[in-house]
Image (cartoon, rainbow, N blue to C red; front, side, top):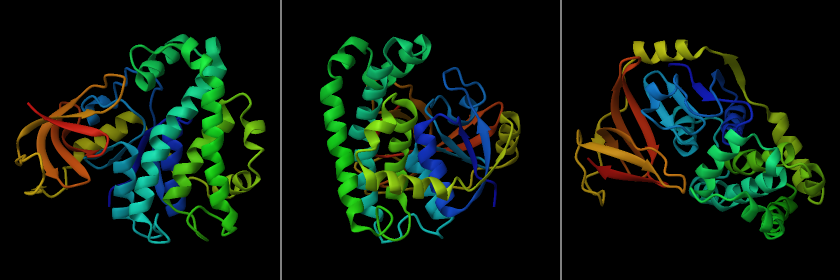
Amino acid sequence: MSDVILHHYPQSPVSEKVRVALGIKGLAWRSVQIPRLPPKPDLMPLTGGYRQTPVMQIGAEVFCDSQCILRALERRFPEPTLFPEGSAGLAWGVARWTDGALFKACVAVIFADAGDSLPADFAADRGRLYFGPDYDMARLQAAFPDTLAALRAQLGWMEERLATNRGFMEGARPGLSDALCYYLVWFLRGRYSRGPAFLAQFPRLCAWEARVRDIGHGRPSELGAEEALEIARAARPETPPAVDPDDPLGLAAGQEIRVVPEGPGDPPAVAGRLRALDPWEVVLDREDPRVGPVAVHFPRVGYRILRT
């Protein structure tokens, strides 16, 4: 089986979520460092324009968005499972909360707290990405007390959940819900100037945070970006072509489509030919001179499929 290759950077909160999942599974994986800001010239040949972090590569299969990454890890490496209490459906519902409203609240708190100390290029890029083209720091700072109060309430839900004293969010063993919650606590502790003091009011959460941190990130080893592209170039897509005939969009295999992330920042579409489609995932066939043919995976939730 080809190596798991994660294209990421150390400060990326969503990458931390995936790194924790790799740790839960105890996997060896290759680490490719990518830039924090576009352009990302050694990533675009794989994704066709998708710019968010992280991206996972296995041979010529490219997985965009942590939903696809985590599903692929569970499918390919089922033990130890990310769903130790049989909570697969529920955990994906939790992900819509942690990756949606809760993540945005964390970003808003961190941005408002940092204010003008944020590097201008980073603030402009991420502000547009998370809050849209009318992003306004003054508005975020005016809303800061309300945002922090709402965030405090939601972390309180985690604190209540941990009152079971079973160790982790889903029970005695760590699972996906731990990765989903942990990366935001990690993000707040490291990037919000008052993060440690803010989190100290949640003693169970802090004790749990230490347990998850101790799991680690599996067994990473460094890999150069050009080496990763060469691995894709030497491989071929392996996803079986299959399109759900009952899908509401009525698409056909081989049809030219575009996949567009939903979000306020006008993210770019990725174009290709439809290879596979099911209720959870869409897979595009693409080619690039630097990598040859690749199969690019996107989730259905949080993305739109457009005919071209």
